[in-house]
Length: 129
Image (cartoon, rainbow, N blue to C red):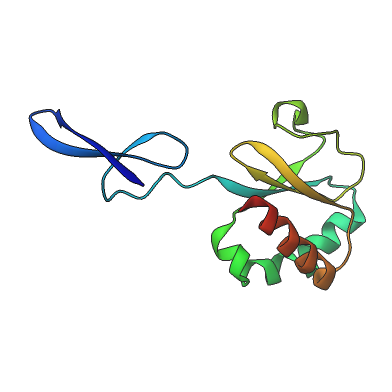
């Protein structure tokens, strides 16, 4: 960050800085964090969706990404996916979509088992950095 100028705000002297995106921020305050989350699209009648919850979800909750990247399940029958910022429609369930600031970064289509899920997820998270 580059220091820009001194300004007064509500009678207090405040040092403003620019962050890498060109936004003004209070000196010493961390820049706003990007909102990253995983969306898991599923359906109540999907066998592999239930297997994903059984085999992957407990391991995800105890993993490093699980501590920092929230995971949200979305029932494809009860959601308007057109409003979610996806790059394309969901055709296979389960589908896991990595979102950053409301935009799709990447996705895992189908159920690949826990080991492959975590390998693919690691690659996806690198794209989100």
